[in-house]
Length: 283
Image 1 (cartoon, rainbow, N blue to C red):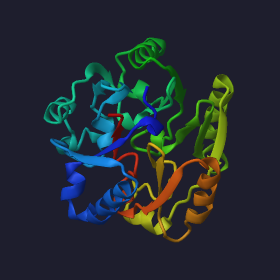
Image 2: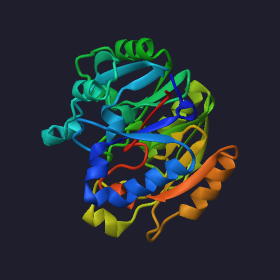
Image 3: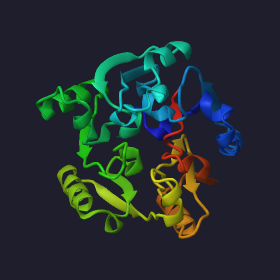
């Protein structure tokens, strides 16, 4: 699979550019990409801004796998259900199509490994044997699949809000001591099984924001954008934030990378951040 570090172009939903609510972050994002020579483009035929979820997974240059996009959390909001086949056709992408129901936001990968949450089993109940589903995914993506527990309070169950790869043997993720015990125990079991190191990244919640936007993603730093040598780290600049602490931690973790910060509240209020609103590719 193509890792984020190997990608060189960022795609955004046309909806992000067209919606006045997101104008500021869209313009800031484009400027930061341009500052570092990263090309960008807007996707046609999308129905919401979270393009990571309904876009294909890149296996190698020019080769993509497109999964079925029918997430349970959109069953009552079908007007937001983008059609991957229409999008791929409109944007001249020719992927291999799979009938497995899997959001792109639930796929976090390195070259030879991919992490997904166990939400994939909930979304594909026709697979009575979990091993069969895992084997099919491994064959399609040509990687070792690593299954982690979902966070039950997250409506999406996506892996990209929990963990990311630093290198082949290291992942970073939400601070285990701040997480639910069932998730902490579950992720520690996965780490032992797959011989992975884990770097704990602090996160926070803002009670006032939670009251107004119960499904918000404010305070989650692991949902950053990685493209080439650039990492765009979300910051929030609200009460209780850990922006400076996390920035310094990222500088030490990714000492060979360029790190920029961007206030993501405009999109964070609605449940996603930078990885959610971007689709990266190697061209």
